[in-house]
Amino acid sequence: MAENNSTADYKDVLLRSSIDRSLRHPVMFFFASGSLWLVLSIILGLVASAKQHNPEFLTCFSWLDAGKVDAAHMSAMIYGWGSQAAFGIIIWLMARLSRKECTASGVILWAAHVWNAVVLYGVIRIMMGEGSGVTYMEFPGEVWPLLLVCYTAITIWSLVQFQVRDAGHVYVSQWYLLAGLLWFPWIAVTAWVFVFLMDGHPLMVAGVAAWFKGTLFSLF
Image (cartoon, rainbow, N blue to C red; front, side):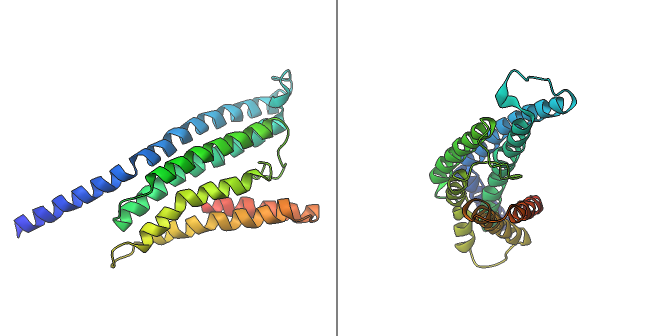
């Protein structure tokens, strides 16, 4: 009996190790690049805070206006740091709970690089004064479809892992992960359509922006 338990434990350790190895590169990339975005967002936040107390601070740089810096700070924090930290946790935790190795780590890593490039492009456009001006959706309209494509390429494999898991117990945390995976594209697509595609009344845009802000906070 003891020998059987020892063999089962050894197999479990091997399985968990193989799952961790299969996602090592994308998970480490998400946290490493997310940490860099966190540092950048903190710097931008400090500049924005300084300009609140001293409007003349760094006025020689037009791209460091208070409105631009504050919008870039929040965008870098949410889509540079917060989203990537969530990606790293979700894809690893879903693989562990589903007890399945990830066979698409290369695709996830490629999509992660593109995600960072798109976020960088969006932040630069904001600081050039070409942002949308919509709270927490300051990126220009053309950025959002690219983010959604990257999001799909990153997260679809977690849904696949859940689908092909061995029959048996499903953890409550997996249901929360699934809900979160479907939540973001739903609110992002809805807000993008009403804000950027439909020529609606400014009050409607403000209402949709407030709804997006609240639901995004609820997601995190």
